Length: 427
Ligand code: S3P
Image (tube, rainbow, N blue to C red; front, side):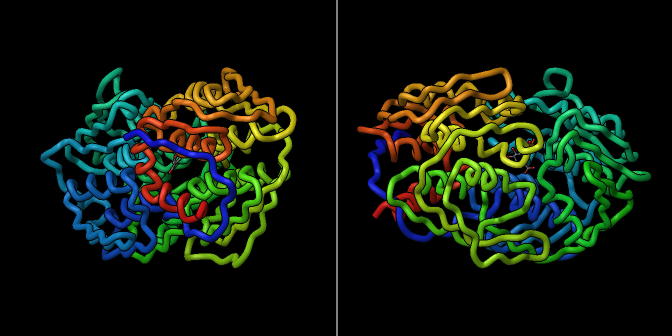
């Protein structure tokens, strides 16, 4: 699908961004392996989370979804049943990597596949430790790429030091450890998002966290529960930046998840001079949330690196756009992981923003941006990456002239109502 996008004078009003993607995936997955019923409210109906529902249905779980309300009839940790078809994860890295962890506990063979983007993404970061735990896994490129075949059933705990800060890796290993023999622990170089730890506790599992290490004892059971999914700060990020850079704007984003392992974007935007205030801070069983109000303001360049990177990894494309509108230089480094996301986001961000007139260069592990540049409309593409598509749509709001965005349909992966909400705010 191709979209013609026009500049926007101002953004005003209030919206509720859709449910958090990471939390929605986990609610369905953990509900599936819990005993008893789990109800989910505020579920993200984006394509990625629908892929998770479809895979767990194929594994014998009864799941009812009506819009943002989902009911899962849990089968227990060892109650999943073999699928007669391949488990197709679409574009979703979280679905495939966490599901591999869960399937390490099932004594039958499953085959996992995905779309073109998934076919390029490395899986050995998860398959290597899961093999060490006793799962039999093979596939393309010696088990690094889909299609992957996994047969589990007899895992033993490991103490794994992960070379990368990745919640997908940490979660897969912890999930595999739940039915394993002995204790499983994962140590990371920096703290990644901790939704798995928080939600497992809500499901009655004992999880220990000590700085950069998370551990679980094997042989634990999950008990069905109610999960309220807050708004996704990674989706809110597009309107936080839009509100900051479109002149005369004031946007309220309601019930946005404020888990500290995800709020790096707020720290960075504030550091750049953004005008953001918090209201109505509250907490569900496992996650904090609140309303965010953003007003347009002058921005200045910044440096983003080190332990901040996992706290904003998915927001770097939209932060790069903010940096094109900031006075001075912005340096983003230590973000090599961007190269293995839905696209190589260092390449795709730099290529497309250059077409619109940005002064931006790629480095091995990040980018350098010189601001402030006047952007102009251009013919750009999402490369099938939802976050690149949304970043370019926000860029089009401040560009002079019309922008043509191809492959805009990718946005439905995480934010099906993105253009509707942009419309509401620009009226
Ligand atoms: C996610 C973890 C992150 C993030 C992805 C969702 C999760 O990936 O980029 O969009 O839900 O665990 P890594 O943990 O691999 O960095």
